[in-house]
Image (cartoon, rainbow, N blue to C red; front, side):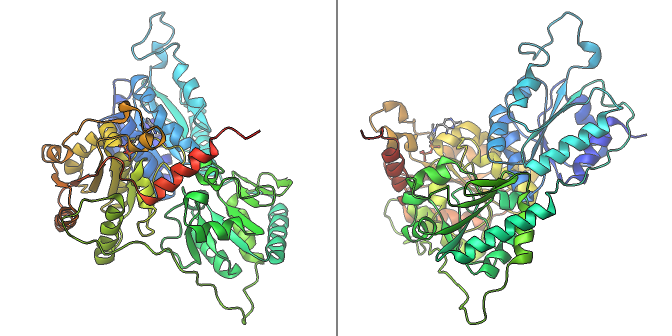
Length: 546
Ligand code: TPP
């Protein structure tokens, strides 16, 4: 009979996991030995648990399946609370596996090292930010527990928590029988789809707004097909940027309300039949709309239910609704011209001169690069780099667009490299790089060679835009390019546009190691999108007028 460790690893693989990111500790070492000796899934060790969590989250996002982060009890797992909270809020199916004290070690009357308050404190903390939990302390129930938790992870597209006591890893255990995906009532799906299609038919200006769940449930192709069949314009939310990047769909761009492009805002805000698929109703996706969308009249399929105006169809998974919409939607009449909305026009043609680089020059340079060498998947941190990414041509993008944690970019780029085998582009501010940039030191040994653009404005610039007077927003000028070589990569400092172009060319010519391009930006030089975003947020945060 296999061991509990082998059973867990095989179940992870059967549920779509492709690799494990981790950092061991004594409570996790016995399980790590099994990860390595069985070779069921490759293991990538990083340097700090936040990096582990972000990398596994990004892998889950790009795989459209499970990401796995494996850590030790207490000091390791608590270090990962922030990335797991982010994955929960942004609906990323991340499996947290934590080693734990052995069953025989509990109840000795001694406090165990890494214990915060009680032995169960860690589990209780993670209960708040995961959708299902299991403690594998009984081999008779373990296969069912593993099946339940992994099914929930995929069905809800949220993190789950598995704790494995260190004296259980070698126990013989029956294999896991995977559970079927959760389905909705077919009658409810038919009725909801019929009602949605009726409303769309009645509308003079129907439109589709799509969000991250479309990728999480792997239905991008179906949604693209639906948009073509309905022949209506599609926008993505801020968080959904990158969706339908490779699909043939009437995509108009990213909806960001008053902070976005006016033509896209008009299509969404003036629609009298707005269908939102897999959209998270967050302030970054919607607050910037200045409440110009009347959510009471919009149609929303997300979070496992469908809301149509004042009534709901509960327990209806997004994939079921989309499948039924596709089954019922009639193709547009032959006479109707197929909508080919103009895709977003992104800035190109960097002048490689001696002028100082601004954020929009970075977008321009990257667009030129993608036009010449093909697009790369992008991992972006929070900060102006993410707003700049809105002017980069639509390509696969992972970013904390709603939860907005810093520190995501570099480890998420590593997650993309490990998960896809492709070379990613990482966009990161200097403040965020200070948090997790060291993880680049793990690239050489693993064969990852990201191209990293650090937006170095010696500042927490996003915060400065909200509160310009605070001197605490000034950062010291770290010389990031200089550390690249010591970490096994190659560094470039670019203050002039000519230097930026040369650095990108050098990075593309060398795929053997990571390239860190430190772009020197003036404090206060921000992207067009960030300046609109800040103006909008500042406006909407004003106290209501009497
Ligand atoms: N800590 C975390 C983990 N996440 C956060 N979002 C913040 C603090 C608050 N915060 C939001 S933006 C920001 C801070 C501190 C500054 C970001 O600075 P940088 O990465 O240099 O990007 P820039 O704003 O300069 O573009």
